[in-house]
Structures are given as structure tokens and as C-alpha cells.
Image 1 (cartoon, helix red, strand yellow):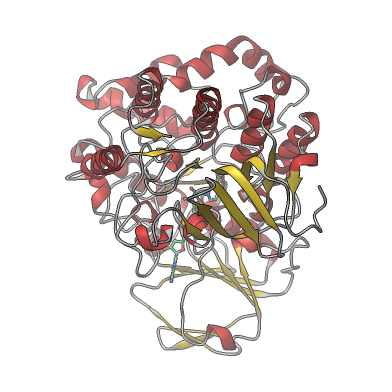
Image 2 (image 1 turned 30 degrees about the vertical axis):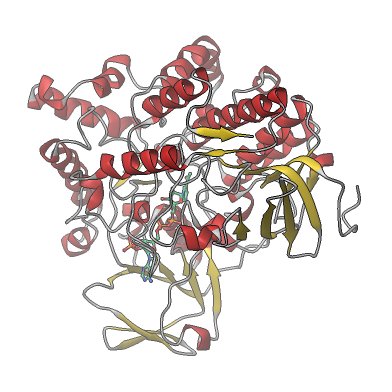
Length: 545
Ligand code: N01
């Protein structure tokens, strides 16, 4: 098949994306005997990790559990160099996987999908790319990623600004030289927290334009040693088993002392205040993003949540020397964990530098950009570069930016105008043979995404195999199952702490996006068990024909 041809022969399946989930899906479907291709907008594999090449970009989940487990082939021959892998190392890992599993021959790069239309008569998807190629496939497998569609802030005058403007998720391959430059960064989310310390070291002056302070914990990154790998060889299976059976988040913290780790399965009230403090301290000393999820009721009981929040708030003034700046950086007014806790190295320390200014834009709003800089609180700050670490149209953006049409006249975007609906976050009624990994209504970004992706890829591949074996040409969620699951996802969040924060978890960061919980908050284990039940009962939430 050549990339020049305008219409390809009919495929059994087409995979959207060649990131973590897409590569796995391509491998599994091919192993299952299907004729399958993957389309990838970027010129290489990697997905979100291809695009997010900003200074300091690295994973905030531990490397040892931020990788594939589906093939023993992939446990041999790769060693992570650091506890939290840099973006370049993750990209190299995915490239290594693609080569090792011989996936590249079935990936079409530089192929951004712009439309996908289901032919109701032939039961075929027709998928078109921006480059003008057309593909037809019986099954359409979206592995487009939950945080892949960047958004830019809509600020007056931004178009007139003459300096360089870069979004962290569209960082140029050759990173700009910041030496002698006056730089501003919008945002203090996960990306900004990683970029700020590095850019501050390189540039003349850095202005941080912060709208909402986030909770933050140090990563405590370090090289992985031979002793770590010795430990890992002995504990790999047990660790994976634990993560698979993790009630809720399934994040990192894999080398924590067992007693501290196991407290996560108990309520805070089962421990004395002194012991709770020790547990928070141990988690903080160990590093990582789930310091505050020390007990199972951290997101259910406001008092427990507030204790965790206060613990982290209390650390700020021990690092930031100017109390006024420390106070500005202190997150208040929303519960810990309802906006993603950020993780980094020397983030708070950076605000002790003479060349860094923090502006709280809620009290000193950005008025406008000018050709030379930005006007904030009535004064113009001259700038050479603006970095926008302003986030993503998360979970839904990747699919709603495609003209996706199923059996009704409504596009997916129109159908989701009041909030996404799906069965298990995987299948949408009216869109037969379309499957989503990391979609809205699945636990996705509230878990170790690589682990949840793997589970979903295997589950969807089994569903497709079921269709193939039974000779079904069509498979989609029933309307009833979709309504039930969507209600369940939304009900779970009612009256909880999640409802109130202005986070991208509820779409609050995108003007006009309906305020609806995007990820399933019921936890990884519950979700996995629910999916297993669906499969073992013969897929009662799906209709086949
Ligand atoms: O984006 P964000 P991100 N005017 O949406 C601010 C994953 N990730 O790229 O909080 C002014 O979190 C916005 O302010 P506010 C991870 O899941 C993972 O940092 O909305 N400010 C916020 O401070 C993460 O959560 C890794 O008030 C504006 C920031 O910009 C997700 O990606 C590394 C604004 C956006 O923060 C997104 O992180 C990096 C405006 N108009 C990211 N609009 C790993 O390590 C937005 N902001 C795996």
C-alpha cells in the first residue's frame, strides 16, 4: 500500500494514533489476524510524547510502571535510566517498541484524520486525512489520546505580539535559545511546573502568569541503579498485580514501604493524627503525585482531604523564602486532587530566584498583549517569548475535532454538545464499530493511563474477535446501556469534591464546553471488574448484527 494512493483497499481495522495505546492496538489486532493500519498525525510514533517536547518534559508516573506489560518481549532489552523518565527517553522507548514489534510498516505517518463517516449499508468506515488520503475499514479503533488537543488562551492583542509564541504541546524540534531573553509563561499546571525551573535557569527574566495555584509535590527524581533493578526483578510481578488490584488511582509510588502503601486501603480515621502525619511525611519524602491520596477516603471525606491539602500547603513556606510569594502559590478554594496535583523538581525553589516574577492574574488580570509584551495590572512587561502552558481540550477534543458521523445525521461533536455519552467509555450508540481507548466515561487520566489503556486495548480486541468469530458485521452499545453507564458516571460524582473545582476534569478550562465529569471516578479496579463482567456475560450492553 502506498501513501500516495487516494483510496486504500478495505481494511479489517484502522487504528487512530500511534502513541502508547495505538501501538498496542496495532500489534494486538494484527496478531489476531486482522488486516490493520494505524494513522498518525505526527511524523513518528509517540502520540502525546511526540508533541510534548518542552524543556523539562518528563513523566510524573514512575518509569518502571509507565511502560507496557502486554508482551514479555518488552520486558527484556529496555532499562529506564531514571525514576521518572524524560520525554526523550519515553519517545525512544516507544520507537524501540515499534521496531521490536515491527509495527512501522503498518503505520502511515503525517496522516491527520479529518473525517470518518460510517456507511450504514456496507457497514464500513470511510476515513479521510488532511493530506487527502482515504481509507476504508470495518472497525475504527480510536487511540487518539485523552490530552492531545492543545488550547490557546483567548487574550486580546495576542495576535499582534511580535515575539515568539509557543504552546508546550507544540514545542519546536529545535528548542529556542532563551539566553538573554525575556520570557513569560501562562499557566501553572503539570507542564508549566516542569518547564518553569529549566526556562528560569536559561533566560534573562521569567514572568509566571498564574491563574490558579496548584497542589504540588516534589518528584524526588534520581537515576535508577543496579540495586533498583535487582529489586524490580524480584518485585515486578507483585507490583503489577498490586496496581491491577488498586482500588482507585493505580499511580506510582511503587517503592514505598509496604505499611505506608497499604494505608491507602484504609480510612484516615483508622490512624492516629500522629501516624497520619508520619504517613504524609513518608509519602512526601518518597516523592510523586499521590502524597495526598494516602487513605482511601481522601476524595470522599472533606476533612480527610483538607488534612492532606494542609499538609502540602504547609510545605510551601518551608521552601519559598518570601512569605508574600509563598501565600500567592498556596492553593485554596478547591479540594486536593480535584485539579491534578503537579509534580516536579525545584518548582517552588525557582520562585526564590531574582530573575523570576510571579503574577497572580486573578488579582492583576492580563489586560492585553501588545506588539512588545503584555499589560498586566496597568503596567507593560516587555517580552521576547510567550510560552503557553494552557492545557488541552481533554478527553473529548481529539474526537470532536474530527467530522465523525455514524448512523444518525448528528456528528459526534453535535451528539456530545451537552456532554459525552458512551457505554464504558468505549462505545457510542449510533457509531457502530467505533471503539475508544482513554475516552470520556473511562477512568483514563485518573489512573496510570498506560495501564488502563492496556486493559482497554485487550478488551476491545477481544470484542472485535467476538464479532469476527460470530460473523457479526456490526457492533455498538445499546441506547439503554449507554444511558445507564453515562448516568452512573455522572451520578458517581454528584455531591463529591470533584464537582466544585474548575478543572479540565470537568471541562471548565475550555470556554463553552459543558461542565460534565469527563473521566470515570469509580477507580481502576471497579472499572476493570465491570468490563470483565460485560465480557463474561456475553456483552449484554452491545447489539450485534
Ligand atoms: O495543562 P493544565 P498542562 N488564562 O490544563 C492555565 C498531563 N501532563 O499542560 O488552573 C490564564 O493542567 C490554567 O489555569 P487554571 C497531566 O494529566 C502530564 O499543564 O485553569 N491561564 C493552568 O494553570 C496534566 O494535568 C505530564 O486556572 C490559563 C494551565 O494554564 C495535563 O497533561 C506532564 C488560561 C493549564 O494547565 C495537562 O497539563 C505534563 C487562560 N486563558 C502534563 N487557560 C506527565 O508527566 C489555561 N490557563 C505525565
